[in-house]
Length: 322
Image (cartoon, rainbow, N blue to C red; front, side):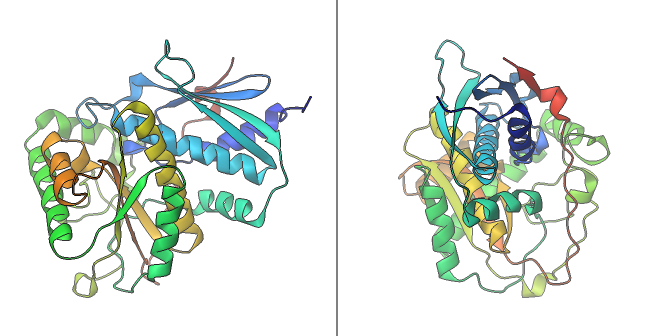
């Protein structure tokens, strides 16, 4: 019988897993370590009722952490087998992960190294073109997880996508409870969770969510700003497992982009409201799937200061034995 990873190896993989991006950096996951497995659970107490009324962002966030775990395990010499939604009677039990020893590869180490360097860069990107071959690589990284990845073209699709962002921003601006929730999870209120001021940027562009107390300066002036690539991740269904897989695909794209030296930022605001989400499905995806998450990609300015890592909760708060 194959021996499972020792407890410290499992905790090392989890330290990488919890670096995954999550909506407002809520980190809405709980982990249980068994003798041979790691179990992932959603933490419903950390769902944002006014930002994420359907719990979609929570599941996508957990999917990203699940993929980060598998990437970390691969770099440590373990192949993972994931059982998604293993217990229908316990909907918050999202995954059971088994481990088999496997030789690591340079690509596995490269992706795991990207975990430490990935940031959600909300600043303007340069107008430098991202080569089509790199975009194709990102698309393939997401599609490997069974998710449709649509690269938004200029023209009509681009205009309709920006209109959906603008619609969502205006609707949220009129929602007092949403505004209170946003301030509770950003700016000076961010400690081991939430979006700190040093990671938020002042912007009038509705594509960037206006977090509280933005302190991150822009690094690129607006008059050289071009149309950065935008990827919309969609699934054929809209059930929980599709949302979980969308998070895994988003993680794969973000880490692949980081490993290639690209800046990236996941976006969900127009998908949190029924009207803008329906518009994106119809006008951008042409009814080919349910949009789950949007990712903007580009080159950061050469003189841009590095973005500090956002805080994370201590492992002891979120990891328990089975």
